[in-house]
Length: 154
Image (cartoon, rainbow, N blue to C red; front, side, top):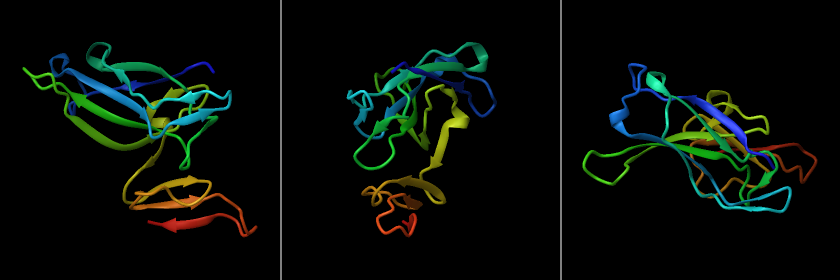
């Protein structure tokens, strides 16, 4: 399956980006997955560390999440922001609560956020909620009794 573009901008609270901050975005699938073509997809992270000018524009090409089957519900990209510490090799991570659904055609990141995984967030899948999911409403789309979707408030 061809890769899909995901793009956006990264900036500080003043709207700019400082190259000396050595920022990078990290995209990682929330679980291993199997693609429709039988490929087992490793959830290794993809990094974006090149940003265009002061606008902080970026683009990355990733495998679309459409057609990926995980073992605990929908497969999504988790997003984090890392910043290199001056004089060290470490990259402390700022975790976001964003989960990105990436369609075959790709798109801008703000159009791809499916949930803010935390209080007030919504997630869905076929079967019971994944272990450890808290603070969200989970919709189980399995129709085992012809009664429709089951809703879990976690």
